[in-house]
Amino acid sequence: MEESVRLQKYIASCGVLSRRKAEEAIMAGRVILNGVRVTELGVKVKASVDRVEVDGQICSPQKKKIYLLMNKPEKVICTKSDPRHRKTVFDLLPLSYRNLHSVGRLDFMSCGLLLLTDDGDFTYKITHPSHEIEKEYFIRTDKKIDENLLKNFKNGFSINEISYRIKEYKILKSPNEYTFTLTEGRNREIRNLLNTNSIGVKLLQRIRIGRVELANLEPGRFRFLSEAEVDSLLETGVNDYSH
Image (cartoon, rainbow, N blue to C red; front, side, top):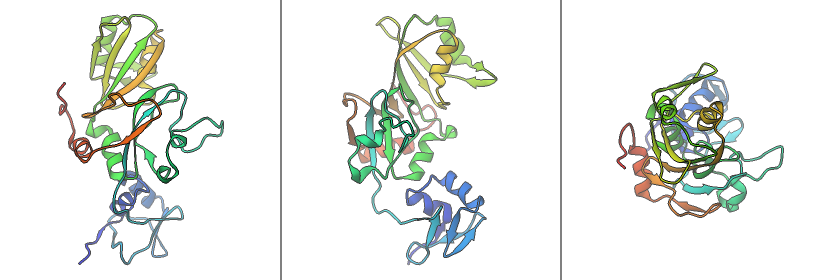
């Protein structure tokens, strides 16, 4: 017998929105269930009998989720379209994968590990700050970063009343090269920290999320995550990673 599931979970399982975004959509009146607008959480549905629409889009169950890892090049954006006609990461994918969404983002000039999927729950797990999934970045700057400043970054740093903090840092052997590990990842956090202190960023590359590493994948190329990698990301949490 088919089991009923909560409406927000069903929407997420269809890859339309993350569960949190699905809850917001329900409360905002953007979800139609069997022709009736739903505005309260707690409603349950069955895929075989109920018709669910979000913003006019019909939610259809997907049998197998897709999880890709891309090495995003610089000067490519993570949105599906751009009014300035810049290249997007979806331009680098075959047509059959352009229904995916990016798991978080990397800004225009940043490069490296980017996950793409149609699994809304997976996206929520990886991106929500409460789960504290580690994201590690390789950074090359135009000058040396004083270690006292690095310690300030680790202890917590406020810019325009917004708090920033890195979890770990490493000073690499090559001049002006470092790794920063974040668990929250505010918009342009690393660039804001460095630029505010008159330090220019020559290269910013994400090299790890949780236990999944970029390794030697060429820029612009992608690969499928293994089942073990997907499981490791879903299981990863605070202090789970051991270098």
